[in-house]
Image 1 (cartoon, rainbow, N blue to C red):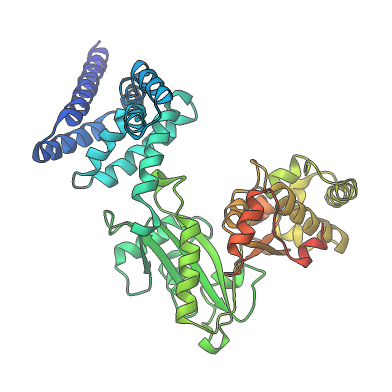
Image 2 (cartoon, rainbow, N blue to C red):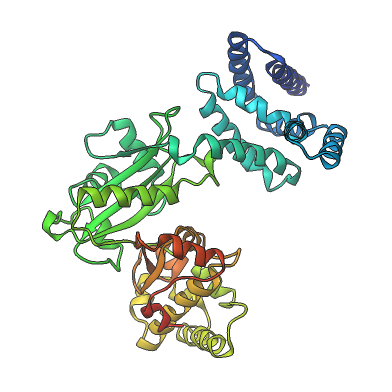
Length: 432
Protein backbone atom coordinates (compact mmCIF):
# COMPACT_ATOMS: atom_id res chain seq x y z
CA UNK A 1 0.00 0.00 0.00
CA UNK A 2 2.81 2.37 0.94
CA UNK A 3 4.65 1.63 -2.32
CA UNK A 4 1.50 2.37 -4.30
CA UNK A 5 1.08 5.71 -2.52
CA UNK A 6 4.69 6.62 -3.21
CA UNK A 7 4.32 5.66 -6.86
CA UNK A 8 1.16 7.76 -7.16
CA UNK A 9 2.89 10.69 -5.48
CA UNK A 10 5.85 10.45 -7.88
CA UNK A 11 3.49 10.31 -10.85
CA UNK A 12 1.55 13.32 -9.62
CA UNK A 13 4.79 15.21 -9.07
CA UNK A 14 5.99 14.39 -12.59
CA UNK A 15 2.71 15.54 -14.08
CA UNK A 16 2.96 18.82 -12.18
CA UNK A 17 6.52 19.27 -13.46
CA UNK A 18 5.36 18.62 -17.04
CA UNK A 19 2.54 21.16 -16.69
CA UNK A 20 5.00 23.67 -15.29
CA UNK A 21 7.37 23.02 -18.17
CA UNK A 22 4.66 23.62 -20.77
CA UNK A 23 3.64 26.82 -18.96
CA UNK A 24 7.27 27.95 -19.09
CA UNK A 25 7.32 27.27 -22.85
CA UNK A 26 4.29 29.51 -23.43
CA UNK A 27 5.70 32.19 -21.12
CA UNK A 28 9.01 32.16 -22.98
CA UNK A 29 7.26 32.59 -26.34
CA UNK A 30 5.19 35.51 -25.03
CA UNK A 31 8.08 37.18 -23.17
CA UNK A 32 9.57 40.25 -24.83
CA UNK A 33 12.03 41.33 -22.18
CA UNK A 34 15.53 39.90 -22.60
CA UNK A 35 16.23 39.64 -18.87
CA UNK A 36 13.05 37.75 -18.05
CA UNK A 37 13.38 35.43 -21.05
CA UNK A 38 16.83 34.28 -19.93
CA UNK A 39 15.50 33.32 -16.51
CA UNK A 40 12.49 31.54 -17.97
CA UNK A 41 14.68 29.61 -20.42
CA UNK A 42 16.98 28.54 -17.59
CA UNK A 43 14.02 27.26 -15.54
CA UNK A 44 12.59 25.52 -18.61
CA UNK A 45 15.79 23.58 -19.25
CA UNK A 46 16.08 22.62 -15.58
CA UNK A 47 12.49 21.35 -15.53
CA UNK A 48 13.05 19.29 -18.68
CA UNK A 49 16.24 17.72 -17.30
CA UNK A 50 14.44 16.75 -14.09
CA UNK A 51 11.57 14.99 -15.88
CA UNK A 52 11.56 11.17 -15.85
CA UNK A 53 12.05 9.47 -19.19
CA UNK A 54 8.36 8.86 -19.85
CA UNK A 55 7.42 12.47 -19.19
CA UNK A 56 10.17 13.72 -21.48
CA UNK A 57 8.53 11.69 -24.23
CA UNK A 58 5.18 13.28 -23.41
CA UNK A 59 6.81 16.72 -23.58
CA UNK A 60 8.01 16.07 -27.14
CA UNK A 61 4.50 14.90 -28.06
CA UNK A 62 3.10 18.17 -26.69
CA UNK A 63 5.70 20.11 -28.70
CA UNK A 64 4.30 18.33 -31.75
CA UNK A 65 0.63 18.91 -30.99
CA UNK A 66 0.62 22.29 -29.21
CA UNK A 67 3.44 24.17 -30.95
CA UNK A 68 2.73 23.44 -34.61
CA UNK A 69 1.42 25.97 -37.18
CA UNK A 70 -2.31 26.76 -37.20
CA UNK A 71 -3.70 24.90 -40.28
CA UNK A 72 -6.42 27.51 -40.87
CA UNK A 73 -3.94 30.37 -40.73
CA UNK A 74 -1.59 28.53 -43.09
CA UNK A 75 -4.40 27.91 -45.57
CA UNK A 76 -5.48 31.57 -45.42
CA UNK A 77 -1.91 32.82 -45.98
CA UNK A 78 -1.34 30.31 -48.79
CA UNK A 79 -4.51 31.39 -50.52
CA UNK A 80 -3.53 35.06 -50.19
CA UNK A 81 -0.13 34.35 -51.76
CA UNK A 82 -1.70 32.27 -54.53
CA UNK A 83 -4.12 35.13 -55.32
CA UNK A 84 -1.44 37.81 -55.13
CA UNK A 85 2.16 36.43 -55.09
CA UNK A 86 3.93 39.51 -53.81
CA UNK A 87 6.74 39.89 -51.28
CA UNK A 88 4.40 40.85 -48.43
CA UNK A 89 2.20 37.78 -48.84
CA UNK A 90 5.22 35.50 -49.22
CA UNK A 91 6.73 36.83 -46.00
CA UNK A 92 3.41 36.36 -44.23
CA UNK A 93 3.09 32.79 -45.53
CA UNK A 94 6.65 31.98 -44.42
CA UNK A 95 5.97 33.36 -40.97
CA UNK A 96 2.67 31.48 -40.65
CA UNK A 97 4.09 28.11 -41.70
CA UNK A 98 7.00 28.23 -39.25
CA UNK A 99 6.19 26.12 -36.19
CA UNK A 100 6.19 28.18 -32.94
CA UNK A 101 8.50 25.56 -31.42
CA UNK A 102 11.30 26.84 -33.68
CA UNK A 103 11.10 30.25 -32.04
CA UNK A 104 10.90 28.52 -28.66
CA UNK A 105 14.19 26.75 -29.38
CA UNK A 106 15.80 29.98 -30.57
CA UNK A 107 14.90 31.67 -27.29
CA UNK A 108 16.28 28.76 -25.28
CA UNK A 109 19.46 29.01 -27.35
CA UNK A 110 19.94 32.66 -26.31
CA UNK A 111 20.33 31.74 -22.66
CA UNK A 112 23.71 30.78 -21.15
CA UNK A 113 24.32 27.10 -21.91
CA UNK A 114 21.27 27.06 -24.17
CA UNK A 115 23.03 25.53 -27.16
CA UNK A 116 24.33 22.61 -25.10
CA UNK A 117 20.85 22.12 -23.63
CA UNK A 118 19.22 21.92 -27.06
CA UNK A 119 21.80 19.39 -28.25
CA UNK A 120 21.00 17.30 -25.16
CA UNK A 121 17.25 17.64 -25.79
CA UNK A 122 17.67 16.42 -29.35
CA UNK A 123 19.62 13.42 -28.13
CA UNK A 124 16.62 12.51 -25.96
CA UNK A 125 14.29 13.14 -28.91
CA UNK A 126 16.24 10.93 -31.32
CA UNK A 127 15.82 7.98 -28.96
CA UNK A 128 12.06 8.21 -29.51
CA UNK A 129 11.52 9.18 -33.15
CA UNK A 130 11.84 5.66 -34.59
CA UNK A 131 9.01 4.38 -32.39
CA UNK A 132 6.86 7.52 -32.66
CA UNK A 133 6.78 8.81 -36.26
CA UNK A 134 4.51 11.69 -35.18
CA UNK A 135 7.63 13.29 -33.67
CA UNK A 136 9.37 13.55 -37.05
CA UNK A 137 8.23 17.14 -37.55
CA UNK A 138 9.69 18.11 -34.17
CA UNK A 139 12.93 16.34 -35.08
CA UNK A 140 13.01 18.20 -38.41
CA UNK A 141 12.82 21.51 -36.55
CA UNK A 142 15.67 20.58 -34.20
CA UNK A 143 17.82 19.43 -37.15
CA UNK A 144 17.03 22.55 -39.18
CA UNK A 145 18.12 24.90 -36.41
CA UNK A 146 21.17 22.92 -35.31
CA UNK A 147 22.37 22.66 -38.92
CA UNK A 148 22.32 26.46 -39.06
CA UNK A 149 23.92 27.01 -35.66
CA UNK A 150 26.64 24.44 -36.36
CA UNK A 151 27.39 25.70 -39.83
CA UNK A 152 31.09 25.02 -40.62
CA UNK A 153 31.65 28.76 -40.82
CA UNK A 154 31.08 28.95 -37.06
CA UNK A 155 33.27 25.98 -36.19
CA UNK A 156 36.85 26.19 -34.97
CA UNK A 157 39.44 23.63 -36.09
CA UNK A 158 41.96 22.73 -33.39
CA UNK A 159 44.83 20.31 -33.39
CA UNK A 160 44.84 17.92 -30.42
CA UNK A 161 48.28 16.96 -29.15
CA UNK A 162 49.88 15.58 -26.01
CA UNK A 163 49.98 19.09 -24.51
CA UNK A 164 46.21 19.56 -24.86
CA UNK A 165 44.18 19.76 -21.61
CA UNK A 166 43.75 16.42 -19.87
CA UNK A 167 39.97 16.82 -20.00
CA UNK A 168 40.10 17.00 -23.81
CA UNK A 169 42.45 14.00 -24.06
CA UNK A 170 40.09 11.98 -21.87
CA UNK A 171 37.23 12.81 -24.22
CA UNK A 172 39.27 11.64 -27.22
CA UNK A 173 39.82 8.29 -25.50
CA UNK A 174 36.16 8.00 -24.52
CA UNK A 175 34.64 8.97 -27.87
CA UNK A 176 36.97 7.05 -30.23
CA UNK A 177 34.42 4.95 -32.11
CA UNK A 178 36.41 3.15 -34.82
CA UNK A 179 39.62 1.83 -33.24
CA UNK A 180 39.44 1.77 -29.46
CA UNK A 181 42.22 3.62 -27.65
CA UNK A 182 43.83 1.33 -25.09
CA UNK A 183 44.77 3.83 -22.39
CA UNK A 184 47.22 6.72 -22.19
CA UNK A 185 50.18 4.97 -23.84
CA UNK A 186 48.05 4.21 -26.87
CA UNK A 187 46.81 7.79 -27.06
CA UNK A 188 50.35 9.16 -26.67
CA UNK A 189 51.49 7.11 -29.70
CA UNK A 190 48.58 8.42 -31.74
CA UNK A 191 49.69 11.99 -31.00
CA UNK A 192 53.40 11.64 -31.79
CA UNK A 193 55.04 13.58 -34.67
CA UNK A 194 54.00 11.18 -37.43
CA UNK A 195 50.37 11.32 -36.31
CA UNK A 196 47.82 14.11 -36.19
CA UNK A 197 44.47 14.55 -34.48
CA UNK A 198 42.15 17.43 -35.31
CA UNK A 199 38.76 18.33 -33.83
CA UNK A 200 35.95 20.78 -34.53
CA UNK A 201 34.72 22.98 -31.69
CA UNK A 202 31.79 25.41 -31.46
CA UNK A 203 32.14 28.76 -29.65
CA UNK A 204 29.21 27.88 -27.40
CA UNK A 205 30.77 24.53 -26.45
CA UNK A 206 34.45 25.50 -26.21
CA UNK A 207 35.49 22.51 -24.12
CA UNK A 208 33.40 19.89 -25.95
CA UNK A 209 34.82 18.42 -29.19
CA UNK A 210 32.08 17.87 -31.74
CA UNK A 211 33.96 15.46 -34.00
CA UNK A 212 37.60 14.50 -34.44
CA UNK A 213 39.72 12.76 -37.03
CA UNK A 214 42.99 10.84 -36.62
CA UNK A 215 45.64 10.92 -39.33
CA UNK A 216 48.78 8.87 -39.97
CA UNK A 217 51.68 10.38 -41.94
CA UNK A 218 53.28 7.61 -44.00
CA UNK A 219 55.58 6.80 -46.94
CA UNK A 220 52.79 5.04 -48.86
CA UNK A 221 49.08 4.28 -48.84
CA UNK A 222 48.37 1.81 -46.00
CA UNK A 223 46.56 -1.49 -46.43
CA UNK A 224 46.41 -2.73 -42.83
CA UNK A 225 45.22 -0.99 -39.69
CA UNK A 226 47.36 -2.86 -37.14
CA UNK A 227 50.63 -1.00 -37.88
CA UNK A 228 48.86 2.35 -37.64
CA UNK A 229 47.49 1.73 -34.13
CA UNK A 230 50.44 -0.26 -32.76
CA UNK A 231 51.37 1.69 -29.63
CA UNK A 232 54.82 0.05 -29.60
CA UNK A 233 55.72 1.24 -33.11
CA UNK A 234 58.42 3.86 -33.58
CA UNK A 235 57.60 7.25 -35.13
CA UNK A 236 58.73 7.89 -38.70
CA UNK A 237 60.97 10.79 -39.66
CA UNK A 238 59.42 13.81 -41.45
CA UNK A 239 61.35 13.08 -44.67
CA UNK A 240 59.27 9.88 -44.97
CA UNK A 241 55.93 11.72 -44.96
CA UNK A 242 54.39 11.32 -48.42
CA UNK A 243 50.84 10.19 -47.59
CA UNK A 244 48.26 11.46 -45.11
CA UNK A 245 45.90 8.59 -44.21
CA UNK A 246 42.70 9.35 -42.33
CA UNK A 247 42.12 6.19 -40.34
CA UNK A 248 39.45 7.15 -37.81
CA UNK A 249 36.71 9.74 -37.53
CA UNK A 250 34.47 9.88 -34.46
CA UNK A 251 31.41 11.95 -33.54
CA UNK A 252 31.31 13.11 -29.94
CA UNK A 253 27.80 14.59 -29.78
CA UNK A 254 24.90 12.17 -30.44
CA UNK A 255 22.54 15.14 -30.37
CA UNK A 256 24.17 16.44 -33.58
CA UNK A 257 23.47 13.30 -35.61
CA UNK A 258 22.70 14.26 -39.20
CA UNK A 259 24.39 17.67 -38.95
CA UNK A 260 27.12 17.79 -41.61
CA UNK A 261 30.43 18.01 -39.78
CA UNK A 262 32.71 15.17 -40.90
CA UNK A 263 32.83 16.07 -44.59
CA UNK A 264 33.97 19.62 -43.83
CA UNK A 265 36.41 18.37 -41.19
CA UNK A 266 38.30 16.09 -43.59
CA UNK A 267 38.60 18.81 -46.24
CA UNK A 268 39.75 21.41 -43.71
CA UNK A 269 42.32 19.02 -42.26
CA UNK A 270 43.63 18.10 -45.71
CA UNK A 271 44.11 21.79 -46.49
CA UNK A 272 45.79 22.37 -43.11
CA UNK A 273 48.19 19.46 -43.62
CA UNK A 274 49.00 20.59 -47.15
CA UNK A 275 50.05 23.98 -45.77
CA UNK A 276 52.08 22.45 -42.93
CA UNK A 277 53.68 19.67 -44.99
CA UNK A 278 53.88 20.62 -48.70
CA UNK A 279 55.63 17.31 -49.46
CA UNK A 280 52.37 15.41 -48.89
CA UNK A 281 51.13 14.19 -52.27
CA UNK A 282 48.37 11.76 -51.34
CA UNK A 283 45.37 12.15 -49.04
CA UNK A 284 43.47 8.94 -48.44
CA UNK A 285 41.64 6.90 -45.84
CA UNK A 286 41.96 3.42 -44.46
CA UNK A 287 38.32 2.67 -43.78
CA UNK A 288 36.16 -0.18 -42.46
CA UNK A 289 33.18 -1.75 -44.25
CA UNK A 290 30.82 -2.16 -41.27
CA UNK A 291 27.89 -3.54 -43.26
CA UNK A 292 29.79 -5.81 -45.64
CA UNK A 293 29.52 -9.18 -43.86
CA UNK A 294 25.80 -8.61 -43.24
CA UNK A 295 25.29 -7.92 -46.95
CA UNK A 296 27.19 -11.08 -47.94
CA UNK A 297 25.18 -13.19 -45.50
CA UNK A 298 21.98 -11.75 -47.00
CA UNK A 299 22.95 -12.96 -50.49
CA UNK A 300 25.33 -10.30 -51.91
CA UNK A 301 22.54 -8.65 -53.88
CA UNK A 302 23.00 -5.71 -56.28
CA UNK A 303 20.11 -4.59 -58.45
CA UNK A 304 20.41 -3.33 -62.02
CA UNK A 305 23.75 -4.94 -62.90
CA UNK A 306 24.50 -5.93 -66.51
CA UNK A 307 24.26 -9.67 -67.05
CA UNK A 308 28.02 -10.23 -67.16
CA UNK A 309 28.64 -8.36 -63.91
CA UNK A 310 25.68 -9.98 -62.20
CA UNK A 311 27.17 -13.38 -63.05
CA UNK A 312 30.61 -12.32 -61.78
CA UNK A 313 29.05 -11.25 -58.48
CA UNK A 314 27.09 -14.50 -58.16
CA UNK A 315 30.23 -16.55 -58.91
CA UNK A 316 32.22 -14.67 -56.25
CA UNK A 317 29.48 -15.26 -53.69
CA UNK A 318 29.39 -18.97 -54.46
CA UNK A 319 33.19 -19.25 -54.34
CA UNK A 320 33.35 -17.76 -50.86
CA UNK A 321 30.36 -19.82 -49.72
CA UNK A 322 32.07 -23.00 -50.92
CA UNK A 323 35.33 -22.04 -49.19
CA UNK A 324 33.57 -21.78 -45.84
CA UNK A 325 31.48 -24.93 -46.26
CA UNK A 326 28.22 -23.02 -46.59
CA UNK A 327 28.61 -21.16 -43.29
CA UNK A 328 29.97 -17.60 -43.52
CA UNK A 329 30.53 -17.54 -39.76
CA UNK A 330 33.44 -19.90 -40.36
CA UNK A 331 35.41 -17.13 -42.08
CA UNK A 332 34.59 -14.48 -39.47
CA UNK A 333 37.85 -14.91 -37.59
CA UNK A 334 41.47 -13.91 -38.13
CA UNK A 335 42.68 -17.52 -38.18
CA UNK A 336 40.16 -18.57 -40.84
CA UNK A 337 40.83 -15.52 -43.02
CA UNK A 338 44.57 -16.17 -43.00
CA UNK A 339 44.04 -19.71 -44.33
CA UNK A 340 41.73 -18.82 -47.24
CA UNK A 341 43.06 -20.07 -50.57
CA UNK A 342 43.86 -17.67 -53.42
CA UNK A 343 40.50 -18.14 -55.18
CA UNK A 344 38.48 -17.47 -52.02
CA UNK A 345 40.62 -14.44 -51.15
CA UNK A 346 40.06 -13.03 -54.64
CA UNK A 347 36.33 -13.72 -54.36
CA UNK A 348 36.28 -11.77 -51.09
CA UNK A 349 37.98 -8.77 -52.72
CA UNK A 350 35.55 -8.94 -55.64
CA UNK A 351 32.55 -9.03 -53.31
CA UNK A 352 33.94 -6.00 -51.51
CA UNK A 353 34.35 -4.10 -54.77
CA UNK A 354 30.76 -4.85 -55.82
CA UNK A 355 29.50 -3.92 -52.36
CA UNK A 356 31.13 -0.49 -52.49
CA UNK A 357 30.94 0.34 -56.20
CA UNK A 358 27.42 -0.92 -56.88
CA UNK A 359 25.57 -1.23 -53.58
CA UNK A 360 26.80 1.87 -51.75
CA UNK A 361 24.81 4.41 -53.86
CA UNK A 362 21.56 2.78 -52.75
CA UNK A 363 19.70 3.93 -49.60
CA UNK A 364 20.83 0.78 -47.78
CA UNK A 365 24.46 1.21 -48.79
CA UNK A 366 27.38 1.08 -46.39
CA UNK A 367 27.28 4.22 -44.18
CA UNK A 368 31.05 4.75 -44.17
CA UNK A 369 31.22 4.34 -47.94
CA UNK A 370 28.33 6.74 -48.46
CA UNK A 371 30.01 9.29 -46.23
CA UNK A 372 33.33 9.30 -48.12
CA UNK A 373 31.92 8.90 -51.63
CA UNK A 374 29.34 11.63 -51.09
CA UNK A 375 32.20 13.71 -49.74
CA UNK A 376 33.95 13.49 -53.09
CA UNK A 377 36.42 10.67 -52.48
CA UNK A 378 37.32 8.01 -55.05
CA UNK A 379 37.11 4.29 -54.31
CA UNK A 380 40.78 3.43 -54.68
CA UNK A 381 41.81 -0.02 -53.38
CA UNK A 382 40.47 -3.09 -51.57
CA UNK A 383 42.69 -4.56 -48.84
CA UNK A 384 42.34 -8.18 -47.78
CA UNK A 385 43.36 -8.98 -44.18
CA UNK A 386 43.22 -5.24 -43.51
CA UNK A 387 41.55 -5.53 -40.10
CA UNK A 388 41.92 -8.83 -38.28
CA UNK A 389 40.51 -7.61 -34.99
CA UNK A 390 37.47 -9.45 -33.67
CA UNK A 391 35.26 -6.57 -34.79
CA UNK A 392 36.89 -6.33 -38.22
CA UNK A 393 36.60 -10.08 -38.90
CA UNK A 394 32.97 -10.14 -37.81
CA UNK A 395 31.77 -7.03 -39.67
CA UNK A 396 33.80 -7.16 -42.87
CA UNK A 397 35.66 -10.49 -43.03
CA UNK A 398 38.85 -8.49 -42.50
CA UNK A 399 38.45 -6.22 -45.54
CA UNK A 400 39.40 -2.58 -45.43
CA UNK A 401 39.30 0.01 -48.21
CA UNK A 402 41.26 3.07 -49.26
CA UNK A 403 39.30 6.10 -50.43
CA UNK A 404 41.41 8.69 -52.23
CA UNK A 405 40.79 12.40 -51.69
CA UNK A 406 42.06 14.16 -54.81
CA UNK A 407 41.57 17.79 -53.75
CA UNK A 408 41.20 18.89 -57.39
CA UNK A 409 38.44 16.38 -58.21
CA UNK A 410 36.33 16.26 -55.06
CA UNK A 411 33.41 18.22 -56.51
CA UNK A 412 33.34 16.12 -59.69
CA UNK A 413 33.35 12.86 -57.72
CA UNK A 414 30.62 14.16 -55.42
CA UNK A 415 28.40 15.02 -58.40
CA UNK A 416 28.89 11.53 -59.82
CA UNK A 417 27.88 9.91 -56.55
CA UNK A 418 24.76 12.07 -56.28
CA UNK A 419 23.79 10.70 -59.70
CA UNK A 420 24.35 7.11 -58.54
CA UNK A 421 27.85 6.58 -59.97
CA UNK A 422 30.87 5.70 -57.83
CA UNK A 423 34.21 7.10 -58.98
CA UNK A 424 36.73 4.28 -58.72
CA UNK A 425 40.24 3.33 -59.76
CA UNK A 426 41.38 0.86 -62.43
CA UNK A 427 42.32 -1.59 -59.69
CA UNK A 428 38.71 -1.64 -58.51
CA UNK A 429 37.41 -1.83 -62.10
CA UNK A 430 39.45 -5.00 -62.56
CA UNK A 431 37.48 -6.64 -59.75
CA UNK A 432 34.04 -5.80 -61.18
